[in-house]
Image 1 (cartoon, helix red, strand yellow):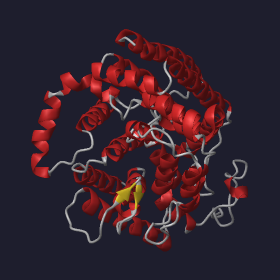
Image 2 (cartoon, rainbow, N blue to C red):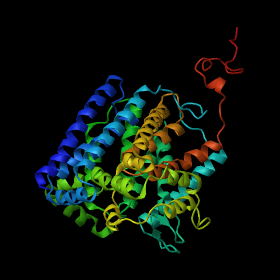
Image 3 (cartoon, helix red, strand yellow):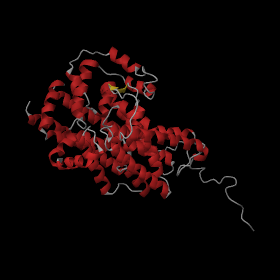
Image 4 (cartoon, rainbow, N blue to C red):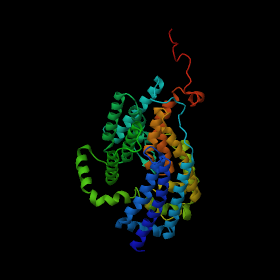
Length: 462
C-alpha cells in the first residue's frame, strides 16, 4: 500500500471531521457556548486536536506513515479506517446534540453563593489535604526527600508499598489553590499565586507530571476569565499554555534534574523546528491510529467488556491496594473469561497508546457504546457548565474549574482513567462539603432569595 494512499486516508478523515466541527462550532457560537469556560468548547478543542490536527501532522511524517501502514495491515485494511471515521462522526454528533439540547441549570450543592466560609472541621479537612498534597509533591514529584517502601506498578496498578494516592496526591492541591485565587482578599490571592509557583517548580523534574502542569495553567487562565467576565483569555495566556504543552510533549516521559533543566530546555527549543510535526503525530496524540487496532482486536478476538472495568473502578478503585489487594476482582474475572488467544503483537502495538475516550466507549459496547457514552458525556458536560454559574459557591466553582481544566486529557484517555482522575481531584472539595452547613431548597430558590430574614434589618428610629 503506497504512502500516498495511506496519507490520503488520514487527510480525508481530518477534512470530513473538520467539516462537522465547523458546523457545531457555529451552533455553539450561536448559543454563546463557544468560550473558554464551557465544557463544550474544550470537547470541541479536544476533537480538533486528536481527530483533525494529529492525523494531518502524521500524514506528513514518514515514520508515522510507515507505522500506519503496519497498523492498517494488522487491523483489516482501509475498511477499518472508514469504520472508525463513521464512529467518530457519530460520537461527535451525539455529544454536541445532547450538550446543546440539555437545559442549563446552576449546580449549587446547596451552598450559599460567593466566597467560601469555612468552619473549623471543614478547615481542618482542607488543611489535611493540603499537607498530604505537599507531601506527595515534594517526595514523589520533586524527589527532595527519601521514602520508605517500594513503588511497583504492574499493568497500571500500584502493587507495591507505595499507593497511587501517595504518587498522585499532589493533585489534591488544585482545590485549595483555586479557592485562594477565587477569594476576594488580595492576601489569599497572593498565597494562591505562591502555591502555583511552588507547584510548577517542584513538579517540573518529574516525567509524568506534564498533564497536571498544563492543566494547572489552564485552571489559572479560567480563574482569570471568570473573574474578569471575559469570553476568552488574552492571547498571551493561550501562547504560554501552548508553549508549555509543546515543550512537555517534546520532552516525553523523561525525568529532569534541577541542575540540568536549563540545558534540557535549550536543547528542546533548538530542536523545535525539526520536531514540530512530532508534537501532534506521536503516540500520545495518535488516537485514531490506535483506535484502528483496538477496535479490530475487540471485534475479531476478545469482544466487548460491557463497561465492567468502569464498574470495578467505581466500586473499589479508590481503596488502596495495600488494604484490599483483590480490589480489581471484576476486571480479573473478565480477563479470565475473555479470549486470550490472539497474536501477541496486539499487546506490543497497543502498549502505552491511547484510542481516546470514544475508543474506550467502543471497548465497552461497540458502536452502541460510542453512541450511549457520548450522549452521557454531552449531558454531564452541560451540567458541568452549571457549576460555574454566578450563583454558585466558590467551592463548587473550584471543583468545576478543576474538572474543566483536565477535560483535554480525559478525552485523550479512557473512561476508567477519566473517572479516577475526576474523582480523585474532587476529593478535597467533597470532603470539605460534608462539614459545611447547607441551605434548604426553599431558601436556595430564586423566588425566595430576596426575602428578608428575621432580625436582618433594624427598625427605623423616629
